[in-house]
Length: 277
Image (cartoon, rainbow, N blue to C red; front, side, top):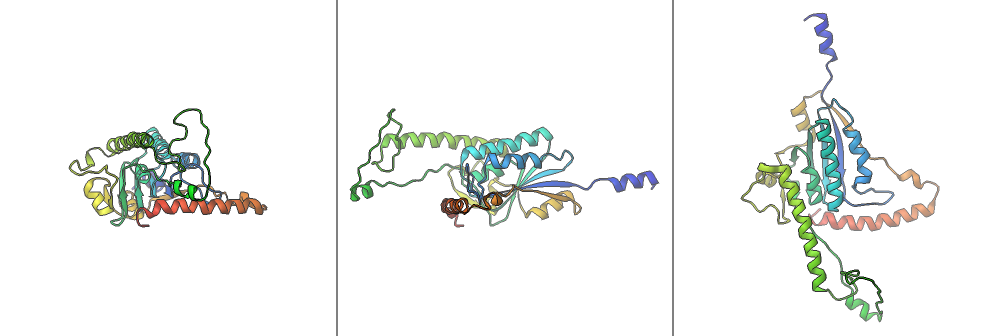
């Protein structure tokens, strides 16, 4: 080997990938101590992940029970936009769960991997709430609501359930569900098993999800990356900025943040417990 050939050989860059962690409930806002997954907080992270023009892939490490369909769509569209713009492959790895909006994010990737025991799917739409009509009556409280527009107080939890309100909600859910189905069929295409009912809101283990075509393989992130790009691959972790220090010096702010955190955690537990986690 000539000196020039040796020099070119040693200067050949190692393969490299960028990793984005998509862990948590997908929702707007969030507390000061714990951020939800949403477009506002993730856009700079996604942009940074695709900033390396010579990298071999962007990795999505997904661990989410879902949440807002709008935020899921916005995040997914941004990932696909930059992936197509930079011609960069995207590979998703599902951890404990990639369900509902979590699966929406995973299905933005060109390939999806999961553990055999991962929870995958839940391609559907859900709305949940409470009715307090009996409670408010027993407490002797009179409900007073004034609106302009007959549908302005739709699904008021302090009134008896109105069949027309429920019908409107179901119509909205159906439209969102159809959008979800269209997204999955357009990204997964012929890989989906056409003989199985995949869009009922059911979810499966990673092993079964592979048979259904919802994922492409079983494997852990580091193992698959090394298999695809070699042992010398360089992994760049892209993380969100922490906001804890913005509360320093203010006990009132910290107390408020902790209160918000408790409320947020209750809501988060609801999303995770739907999948036994």
